[in-house]
Length: 386
Ligand SMILES: Cc1ncc(COP(=O)(O)O)c(C=O)c1O
Image (cartoon, rainbow, N blue to C red; front, side):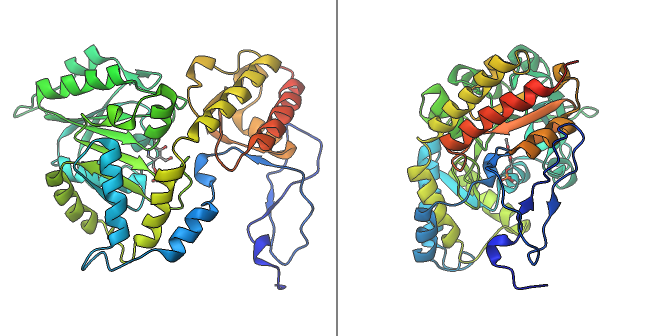
């Protein structure tokens, strides 16, 4: 091993083969190897790849901190108060991640054997290692959604009061924006419909609001209009808001007391967490309104794709910062499409059979979007079609 500079660690070399369809995966470069100069790359795999801003880095370095397992961390408390106010709740709890926020909500609201009603493609069902079943013992019952929305009549008729034989429905989980549906928004009327059902049947509503600020910005409403009627809401700092860490679970004072104990149980109490909370404060103060830029970039990207290769995208579903491409009309697999785009300088993600996801974010500025539009135009035209 030579003494490569730290900036080289983790860099990916792009193979220069011109074969677009069957191309090797990029190979990881040992820091001691010489780095091949790269052509521009737009990394649109996820908004989670965003780097903390200079202001966040400064705030982290200068944060006033204390042991959050003893006297309490003042910067974490400040962040929690901000999150509670923004979501229209009494209190909030700083968690390591959105996954932990959802899990702690389930642990706090539910008993083993309780039933949860949720949209079939919810993030917590697909990508959170089955925490709600493995660690809570809850039974998710899923409903097909349209653009992330469960049909409210079907939802209400699925509520089960519970009996000696049947599980009791205890909770509805909604996701806003809905990731796998395409970053689609649940509007205020829809959320009110959920809250009405919950009130009639004495249920909790938990909102996975990992990207609820994207929804609020797109719908031009205050976030709390989408969250205040839920018994708990998780908001994530590490996506379009660019913080390096963390999510907040918001709810009543009483709920948060219970949630704090559940967070301890899963090892989520972190000592001088104020360093991370400081970045979260900057995220909430400076990064929410600018999500509109990400949405405009996603729209531009989607419309340019529709122009060169119509029928790959459902433009109605492009409501925020996520664009899904259907690989089928191109006559290639999603993996081949991802490889071809990566080789040409656009990184994206295969998220399921025939589906490829592009996500716009702060670190993919207008220049990178222009680059992506040019590359997508060339690559998509090159496929023969199904
Ligand atoms: C809708 C949704 N919920 C929850 C999460 C989990 O968040 P985290 O990665 O912070 O655990 C994600 C992550 O992408 C998500 O998209």
